[in-house]
Length: 232
Image 1 (cartoon, rainbow, N blue to C red):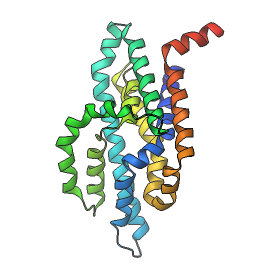
Image 2: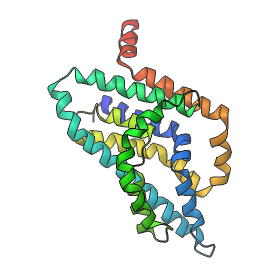
Image 3: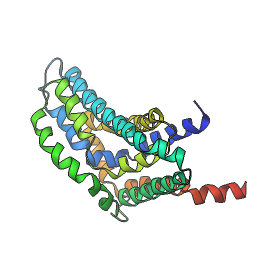
């Protein structure tokens, strides 16, 4: 594995980690509801863990599949037309900037981008109701597989990184790394939803994370890379 790929996977992981506050709003509700679906008893914590982990495994599997599908479309195109790489990198950076502005509650322009996936979600959303209320890990896993297709600017931002990868497998691994980055926030939501609600609604915290994503997006832009290379 090259150092460049490691950097891309690490970057995707950090996007997921920083964007965890956004995940609390988009997916946190369903994750928290899995906890409430389990009746209190001797095996409460174990059953709760199975449902929450199952849901998140399904969600990450969907992100990985999205990365692989995008890789099928873009990896050969980038190899054949090298001029496409800077375009995709610019798109990824701009999406991250938009995501940061949205997360910090500065500007909600990312909502226009999120509408791209709305037609697909309209077909999948009714299917999610077939698996609720969730009683078994298999239901939670299937629900997570469907929920991973929810239109989300954070996911689309990371797909921009996946589109830059040299192979289908590396594109899939990029999205897998992103999914792992979102995991701490999502697991914490399931097990401690009420405690995290305060942080999700804290304006200063959201703005801090939003600014971090904006900086990440600016760093991603090819023009920034060229400028830093000149300084070096």
